[in-house]
Every structure is written in C-alpha cells, then in structure tokens.
Amino acid sequence: MITTQEKKLKKLAKNAIKSFKNLKDWKFSFKNLRNKKHLGVCEFELKKIIINRSMYFNVYTFIQILIHEIAHAITNQSSHNKIWIKNAKDLGYENDTYIAFCKKTKYFYQGICLDAI
Image: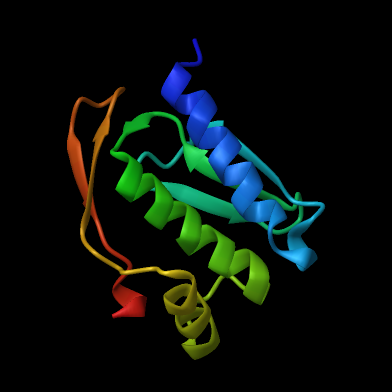
C-alpha cells in the first residue's frame, strides 16, 4: 500500500529529476531492492532512479539519497570520481552517515558513501 508520504516524496523526486534538461526522459520509482543495504540506485539503461521501498528513513535522508542518485545520472557514470563528487556537492549532497530501518530484516543500517569523503 502506498502511503501519503510516499506519494509526496515520489512527486518531489519526479520534479527534481525533471528540473535537469538532460534528465527529462528519466523516471523515478520506489522498489524493493534485492540488496537490502542499497538505499538507492541509478539505472542508466532504464533511465531510472530507484529508492529502496523496503527501508524506512526520514525526509532528509530521502533527499540526500535522491541527490546522490541524480549526481550519478547527470554525470552518466556509476563511479564516485572527482566529477561525480563535485556535481553531488554542487547539488547539496552532504555525505552524512545515514540511518535506515529495513522492514524485512528488522535491522537498522548505517550508510555512508566512502568514496565521496
């Protein structure tokens, strides 16, 4: 069942993605990802940014995950090289330590992008 908050976050994400000219044909969705430790992924072939539905996290963490994945999309690369780091930081990525609770495993996960430090 889709919650009201999920609907609002999905609208926010779609508007954020569409604000970039080179991402106009990109999509956004929530999905239960196989790797429970991934909070989000950027699917280049599908032109899609996905946030892990099986995790609970606050709005700040959602926005930071979204920025992280948008930075991958606009740089068109999966690595966290200097170009990606610059774009991510320019977009407002703070690379904090993020806490998420997995609905399936009932564990808390602590995430940080070590390459972007």
